[in-house]
Image (cartoon, rainbow, N blue to C red; front, side):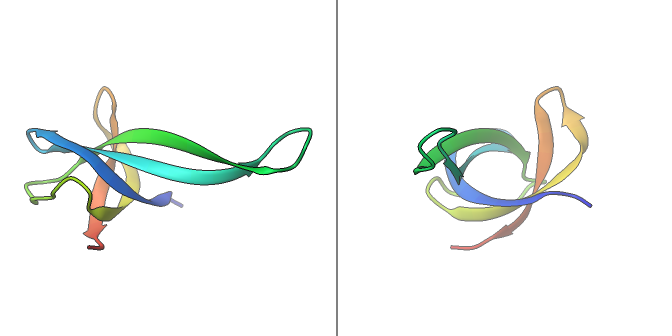
Length: 77
């Protein structure tokens, strides 16, 4: 089953590629307080136009390029 993640577009400067930042909450190993953790993914857009700041859903796929393993599923806003 493929991963489906939701995040915010932080860069749309490349051709057919955007960078999406996904935020997750994880507990601290000792104190158990929830902490925010961010990770950036390169995403293939397949010709769709997306602006910086948009909320998007991405889905894991076979490697499209060396660092690109996700495709754009839908644009939320």
